[in-house]
Amino acid sequence: MPELKVKGYSTFHPLKTCLVGDVFPVDKFNHLKSDKILSPLSKVIEETKEDMEHLSSTLKKFGVDVFRPNMADTPVDLSTYARKPPQQTRDDMAVVGENIYIANNLPEYGTMLDRIPEQNRFYPKRYMDYTHDSFTYDLNLSDPNTPDQQRLLSTSFIHLMGKDLYWGTNQPGWSSSPLIAYHKSRWQSEGFRVHLMDTENMGGHGDATWCILKPGVIVTLHDLQNYNDKFPGWDICYLEDKYWDQLSPFRTMKNKVGGKWWIHGEEHNDQLIDYVESWLGDWVGYCEETVFEVNMLSVNEECVIVNNYNKKVFDFLEKHKIEPIICQQRHRWFWDGGVHCLTQDIYREGTQIDYFA
Image (cartoon, rainbow, N blue to C red; front, side):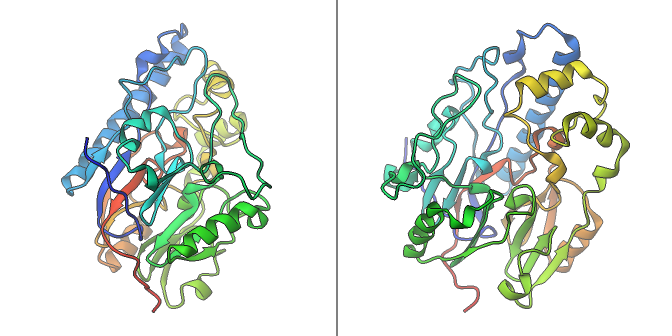
């Protein structure tokens, strides 16, 4: 197989190669006997696969080469351990410059990753294995000699804009970690200006709270990034809080699962709730924290893929001559993932431009 090149200097440069995630097929749950669990779970899985296939076909229409995880050749037994599916690829890896950082090396990614030259692949986080219900980091975070491929990295918090790299995480005390200095030094040596963002209290991942659509244009939930200082003169679209958090069905489910996930119509299905809470903990996130209107994927500066219609966002996009393409993810409240979470840029055209020169 030919080598696969990776490149990414800006989140809005023309997208040419993209990884779109996937979920395990329904037949992996044939061991379930209760229809109260199997029926709604099957619906979620089947419709999720349909929506992700629609997302893939939409990207192909724009000339993007699309890779999918290799589900067929990767054995998995969900009756013994329901490990995380290779769905939210943005949480698992990031392309920075001409290297890819694989934070969660799921086996379904192997077919694609093996085509990327070894010198361009880095593994900042290592899971021991998936044979039990927890993972362990086999490294000493305080040891400056910890091998490069074992260093931690929160990939969904990385925003790229030419020479400028914006980075944060929702982990307390992250900015004082020696790992931050390590990655910052690496990226600075590659020509990036690295900005550590104040993101500890924003809730959720970085791509669920703010988005750079093109130079001069940002959509965001919080005014906590000191935008006036970091992006002087830019047009900022501030979104309201999560409107769906006020819906009665969501509040009913929230009272039972703490706002982590929601399947509309299953608020009183206690069998399903008990199963997800006890068995699928790695699958769900905290959808209460996520505003999916922010979680957009730029095809280029003139086109962006969105999860759903939002008048304020669509008016803002029209103002800046950006065309929105809706690729609805019907079960995003279960998986806690929008179109940006479900995709990973592998190759974007463009170079390390200085947009603030």
